[in-house]
Every structure is written in C-alpha cells, then in structure tokens.
Image 1 (cartoon, rainbow, N blue to C red):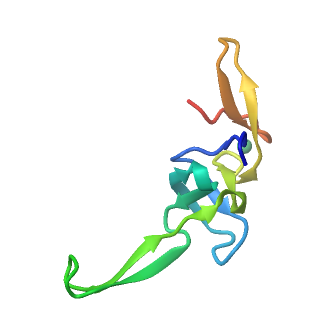
Image 2 (cartoon, protein in one colour):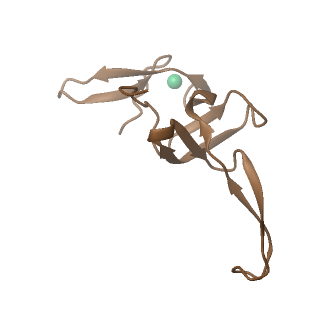
Length: 108
Ligand SMILES: [Zn+2]
C-alpha cells in the first residue's frame, strides 16, 4: 500500500458508500494512514461494556470504530453529494484539492 496518497483530511465531510451506515454523512475525526482507515463522527458506532471498576462505574459507552477509506467519499457542500476530489494548481503555485464536479476548492 506504500505510495497511496490519501486525499481525505481530518475535518472533511464524507458520505458512507458501503456497510451498515451506507448513505450516512459525517465528519472525519481521525485518519489512520497506516491502516487506510478513518474515524467518522457518529458512523460505525460500537458499544463497549465497561466493567464496574472502570471510570463512570460501569455501563455502556458508544464509540466510533474505524472504517476503510474506500467506504467513504467526499461530500461536497456545494454539490450536496459524493464527489471525486481532484488536484488543482493555483496561480500562486499552491496545490489544492478541489471538487471534480463544481470546481470548489476544498483547502482554504
Ligand atoms: Zn462540488
């Protein structure tokens, strides 16, 4: 997998394209580059049971579990749908990400 460049970044809005949360939208809260996975807010929630001795005195906590990066797509706020990200070279030499569909620059 070496050399694979992840186009998504922390804070990006994405839409889930596969799995039990298919069609749901959320914001990337963490990227696990080495495993090609992302944590997305309120997506792929798993429940964990806490033992009585642990903080909070037991119970169940809900937490996001990582999902594979190929199962999410960037959600363009302007197009309001999943889009492909392209690279765009600006006049000032900056290489930024942009929406393939509407051309909106994603890196501000
Ligand atoms: Zn767009």
